[in-house]
Amino acid sequence: MGPGRTPDAAGESPTATSRSEALSWWEYLRENWIDVVNDAILHVDLTLAAVALAVLIGTTIGVLTYRRRWLGSLATTTTAAFLTIPSIALLGILIGPFGLGLTNVLFALVLYALLPITRNTIVGLRGVDPAVVDAAHGMGLGRVRVLWRVRLPLAWPVILSGIRVSTQITIGIAAIGAYVKGPGLGNEIFDGLGRFGSVNSLNQVLTGTVGIMLLALLFDLAYVVVGKLTAWRRPRTRLEGAAGEPTGAGGETIELREVSKQYPGHAVPAVDNLSLTIPAGEIVVLTGPSGCGKTTTMRMINRLVEPTSGVVTLGGTDVAELDLDEHRRHTGYVIQQVGLFPHLRVDANIGVVPRVLGWTRQRVAGRVRELLDVVGLTREHGRRYPRELSGGQQQRVGVARAMAADPPVLLMDEPFGSTDPITRARLQDELLRLQKQVRKTIVFVTHDFDEALKLGDRIAVLRPRSVLAQYDTPQAILAAPADDYVSAFAGSKRNLKRLALIPVADVPLGPAAGGLPSIAATATLRDVLDTMVRTGSTAVSVTENGAVRGVCDVA
Ligand SMILES: Nc1ncnc2c1ncn2[C@@H]1O[C@H](COP(=O)(O)OP(=O)(O)O)[C@@H](O)[C@H]1O
Ligand SMILES: [Mg+2]
Image 1 (tube, helix red, strand yellow):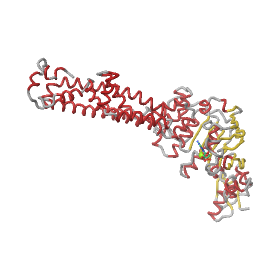
Image 2 (cartoon, protein in one colour):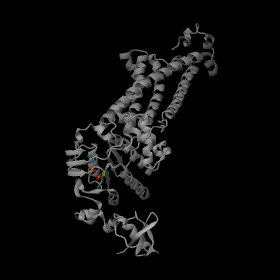
Image 3 (cartoon, helix red, strand yellow):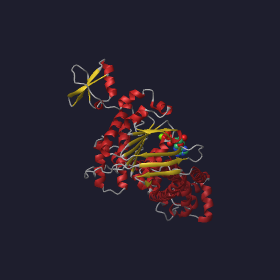
Image 4 (cartoon, protein in one colour):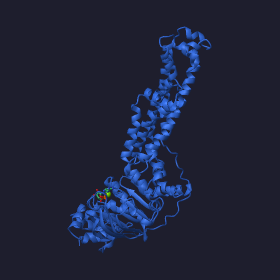
């Protein structure tokens, strides 16, 4: 409230003459701009201070309460309550504890600014894709890392829009602060209103009002820029490091001993007393109908689910005795929803665990490059964001990310479930090729029996509650299903499927003959049958590297 603008002080003011005569708004502005700019600066300072405090307090409340539904609701309703108090009343009430002036206004402003920030923090943090969070936990990023590196960056656009709304509220209510002698453009308005009807009072009110609107617009513009700048576009990682360390570690044996899991509030256990040994270096497929407990069983291995009873061992060590995050970092985990971090480029996604493990930048870069190659992606793919890849390519990145730290164990929960049949077949082939090189222990969950046949060294067919119906090699299960449940699950074309498991190279061949359709030695008996049906021939010649090896006929 500059004394220069009160009518009785007009005599000392440099704008003395303007006070006494009626001016147009422009003339008024020209004569008083220094005061107006000063008030505007104070208004901005006040707004920034209030919003900064509200961000600090609001995001803290949000982070502390978002995980509990009732706590979050309590926080939102409490902060919402302040918005319902007329600002002029709150400022008046605060004269009690804080007197007139800055502290009073600042306190009130922070209260008003809290709601949008708190609410958006809660909504933003809760809104993060659960699959991404699940993947993050599965990779052994602890709570704090998941919050800082995953949840907050992903919630940021929502939080920022809350801050933006708060800022608008603050700019408006800060004007009312002049009522209790706060600083800012409100003083123009209150002065003008105080001497309403006298010379230039309307000009003064108008100046304050337009000034506030302008500030609001400028702030909003600034938020658009801030939003763009903080869109979590990360710089590209350079992949010019040393070659990755040789992939060494083979698999480790996993043993489940009388493991059960009863989810709270459920009448029947999800897993009921399961015992299963998964030999090192093999692919073991857990299969069974939806809801039979496959996922639960798998998640007890990396302790995303803690068993109610029983023991899970890895390489002979009880996993309950291992450091939780350490254990998960050495257990690759791939899920159907993939759960790639959308705010990180593919390179960075693959490199997450090695970086957490403290590998040098060079070693991480080398490893990422190597893995892109292993899963059949180019370096150019590595520079993209996950949303810029197809579903199948994202699945590959998921596999690469799980293998990054060269874990002895890979847990794969319906990893190819959401891809089309052709991509799926290709991903399966690639997994098999990969496994030939790396020999991990792979636990693979699928409800698709054909996928189980193709991938599994062994298949565990599960009944509801993860009761083991049969645990054997694909050939053995097809040849002798343990009971009707297994044979129903194996499907009606059981014998045809058996043929698909027998390479033509493994059967005795007759002497070579000309004029027959040919087939490669890597094909299966099922392919031979296919060719016979297609060509009407009762024999095919088997070729290897261009040379005929022999003839396979109906007999
Ligand atoms: N987090 C959970 N909380 C409560 N119940 C669950 C949870 N996860 C799974 N279940 C229940 O446990 C049973 C087995 O589920 P799941 O292991 O996901 O089976 P699958 O992977 O074979 O489809 C189901 O009845 C499911 O509803
Ligand atoms: Mg499942």
